[in-house]
Length: 224
Image (tube, rainbow, N blue to C red; front, side, top):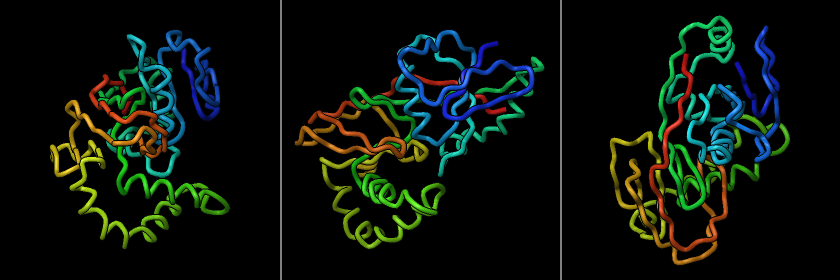
């Protein structure tokens, strides 16, 4: 049983776990049966970007220690050590499939956009220092300061063909203006070759005018 832990050192009884801080191209993912990802949604996205080209991505165990942990909440994942205990004792584990999507050369799992989500993350990152460096407080402060501009600007951004926001947990809404709850081969002309885009809480620079967004595959997340 080969297990790779990314982001935080995990030691558990008789299981042999290889611990690394970040996933790099020189790590052979094919050698592992499970990947433990410690962090938030952005960490999951970055790990997936490095290995989604594989035919068989190892099953993923989440150790949700980020600020929001949307993916872990969506799938209601159990405590990591309860899951490791099942693996150690060869007990049956339960998995849940999660779709992920491509945006040109990037990957995301549930959220992408250049509307209020982008503004919110950008301001939140400026608050990442001191006693509010970790945790949710920086996001709450950002939401508080941006609320007036969001109230004014959101209707205009929803009508703009250059703006978009994808949030797949709201899949019951196929589309409302430039808001998408589902991803079905979305094509967007941003009219600019350098664009900041929010992806699962990360901010990335896209050096393309045209965005092609589509479903890219699924991953297996161990939930219990």
